[in-house]
Length: 407
Image (tube, rainbow, N blue to C red; front, side, top):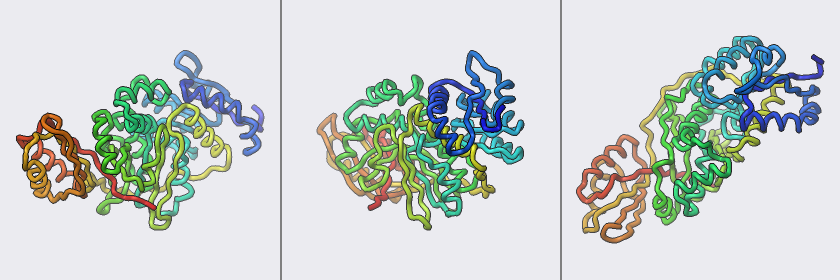
C-alpha cells in the first residue's frame, strides 16, 4: 500500500453507498489536491458479497452506510477498536447507541464523523462542533427531514397527503416504507444527535417525544393560509427551566420566520445564541447524492489533521411540558354560543384566543382558531374537556404554532 494512498472500506452499496462510490471516483483528484493523498476504495461490503475482516484489514477509514442498528453497530465498534476512523450517516445508530460509540472513539483515539446523519448537505454538525464550539447555545430548531417537508409543500399546493406521499416516492424523496420519515422518528433521531452536540448532554432517541404528519388534513392547511400560517415538521432542542427540551412535531409558522420559506426536499436549521443572535443554514436534505456529498466532506476532514468532535458532557434534566401557541380545528354544530363555550373552557386552562376563522353551515360548520401560548399539559386538559362538549362532531385537532418572526 503506497504511503500516498488513503484506503477506504465501504460498508453498504445501496442508494447512498453507490452514490458515495461514484462521487469518490469522480472527485478523487480534487481530494488528492486538498489532502496530498489519493483516496482509494479498498473494498465494499454488500448484502451479497465482501468480507468485513478483509475490508477492515485493508482500510484506514471505514464508511458505514448500511443503515439500521445491527450489524452496523458491531462493525463500527470493531473498526474503532482496531484503530480505524469511522464515518457514518446512520442517525438511528447514533441516536440509540451514541454514547457507546463516542466512548469507543475516545478510548481508541480515532475519529467518529457523522455530518451526513443530520440534515443532508447542511453542515450543521461541523458548525456546532467546530465553528460554534465556544458559543453558549440557547436553541436549535429546524426542518431536518426533507421527505416530510416535500410532502407538506405539496399539500400546501392542494395535494392530499396520499397524493403528496406518492409524488415523494416517485421523485425518490421517500422510501417504499416511509414510516420513519412521516412518523417523525427520523427527525427525532437527528434532534437527539444535535442536542448532544449543542448542549453537551446525552440524549437518546427514546427520550425525544415526536409526532409525525400522517394525521394532518388538507383543510388544516387551507384554514391556516387564511390565518397567515404555513406548516412544517419542526425539530427543537432548547434550554428550558434549567433543563433541556428536545421534541419533534408539526408546527405552523408565520411568514416572517426564517424556516417558513423552506420548501420542497430542503432542510434548514436555525441556531440561536446570545453571542450570535441566530444563524440559519439550509440546503437539500433528501437524496443519495446529497448525503454522499456530506460523507465525502467527512472523509476529507479525516484525511486532514484531526479535530475533536466530542466535548465533555454536562447532563441536563429533560423538560417536556413546554408552552406553545396552538392552532385548533373543531367540527361543530351550527348553533349560537359555540365560540363562547369553547372560549370558556380554554379560559379555565389559562388560554386566550388570538384569532378565529368560522366557516360553513350545518354539517359543514367549522371553528378554527389560534390560541396564545400555554403549557402542553394545559392544552391537553382543554382538548379533553372540549371533546366532551355536545356540539363537537369529531375530536378537536391541535397543531403547535411558532410565534417568532425575524426581520
